[in-house]
Length: 351
Ligand SMILES: [Mn+2]
Image (cartoon, rainbow, N blue to C red; front, side, top):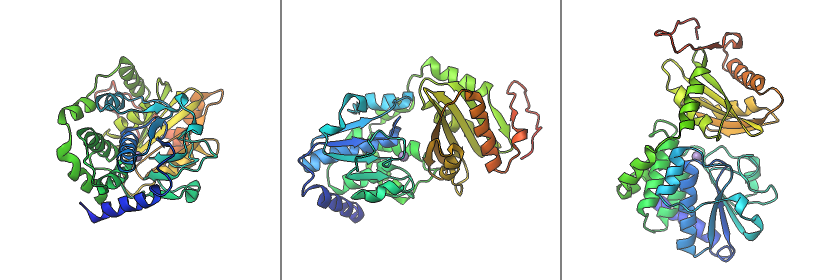
């Protein structure tokens, strides 16, 4: 076992064991949890139970929207509750994964300071008062951080745990093409032999609902471009996770290095921003896009956020696209629809 992992577990043990094993723990993910958040939560919950005998509940807010993520929960038998079914008062200790306090993308009440935060997004001010904050933006996945503590404890990683972890690292780093670091590779290589390969395949290729195809069609009907930026503004979406899914899909278009997708869900417009440029700061750009009324954040190559809707949603979406074009030093006046019915797209626009 790596000495680094062992040391991490010992630090956690020194923090938890003296006076934090008796009260109930709530492990909370960000809203609309992705595989990274789900795997990190599952590993930390199991570690708190097995290593310290703690009583632990895992919870999330929003929706588990993507078919892959629903399949992950089902296939791996992850036990996770929606926050609406529980009361924060019934818990004494709180652990946040893949998110931080007061970021606007988790359901932790503002007056609760969590005991532990594990995250790989840039550190936020409110995390300074967290007694055990392990925030490492250079690491590709939060699940990697959780795995280091878990592996450091000497506990066996179950096939389910290994499968969740491998899927989380793969999706979060796009198979190591995006922001993966040494710790991700070491954890991945350690647990890969324990993966249930059939379960992994089932999660990667789930059955997809018709609504997915409807959204893809809508995204393509509305796709626009300006230079290296491709964007699409969806109408009302059934679940917010389709927005990042479309942004990922559009980013693969040849000749494009930035993608933006927006879509309305309830009283918010959700945004996802992606880039292939490893030196970019998509998170900072997202915070500029959403301004003071919205909330946003992310990493270098991917970011998400939301703004509250007003009377004219389409105009708001259009404005977001124009603001992004401007920030990327492209002329917003030249954002034009991409007509995919043409066999060869007329190269009307120049970068
Ligand atoms: Mn993450």
